Length: 81
Image (cartoon, rainbow, N blue to C red; front, side, top):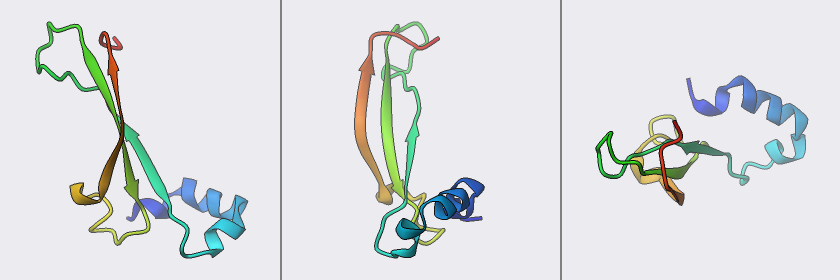
């Protein structure tokens, strides 16, 4: 199943028909995850990369690393818990 076939995107397309009718508009997915840059559980430091991916691509392409974009990298002083 392609990510753009999810219930959330179907709801978005119903709520915003002008946007979904234009094929040149870009559907983006936003991901974030906490990363410990020192690979040590005793280090009290973490980072939060924010990654964008384009859902307009073919299913085999949209989750490949070359089509993901690091938009923000938020450093944090400590782990979120």
